[in-house]
Length: 371
Image (cartoon, rainbow, N blue to C red):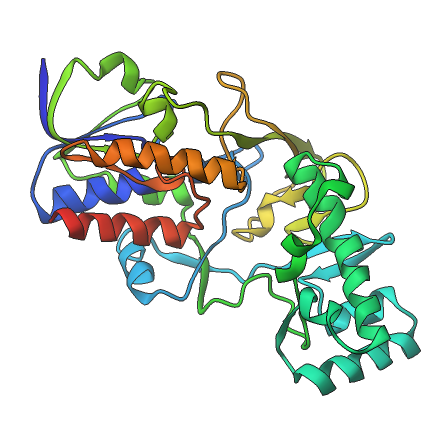
């Protein structure tokens, strides 16, 4: 029987941060297992034969306001600084997302756009994020009209495709947090730090796992080896319901069917990401050469088709944010609390959709807890 100080299930971002900290700071041995054939989890990328770095599981742009997280990852990579800009096709035109003052002039006649701009800035100030719920409640017919327009054109169709529900079944209050920007900042994120690892995410992952105390086994299912390894601590970043053999029921997820296309041309679309809330069955089209500003004769594009998660068929992407699912997760957490030296983390272990910086922060905090 193999012996190791720490067993980590999952070689995604959570597992790699924990492995690196345990090896570097506590000088302990770590075995990381993952059922996939590669390291990195969903941040895994690779060079396509065209020379373009492709994100296998969809686009990942790192962004954070947390200097501690930024400084930590900066030990393992140089950065390609990158301000993400996203557009959506609305009424046949490419419009900035999130919806801002420039967007007004792309979809409305100039006189109406000017009137809306004047009212938005007059009521809420310049360069503010205004939830459309606030616009809905405004004592102004034009602002209420704008709220309904943004809801229908930006949020409704995209969300219906993303979550597989009928538009009429969407609760309008859910969209209340969707912002309108009373400024001309066209960046998708406003975080202080925004970048992509200069050599790609997989290269960063290799450096994180380079400590000789860390051993990685790929194409390895935890369920098949859990009785073959003796460990003192277990860090489980896989699905918490699967850890307990779905004893209380299965936690639902949404998945993605990501279809890649290669084109014999320098560029395919006007920017890295185009959303399609009103057209087609896919939610967004992503062109990868923009991310690292790669120069190649060909280009690679992906289209994302949301679909239900089915065990053994596709990957878990998004926990389904419904009350009954969070209650079921809570019951699994109660079972987990009774285990000694077993820790759950990550998007699947916590049944929570984390941004990358949140994933790193959570893993660093967990390490500090056990340190």
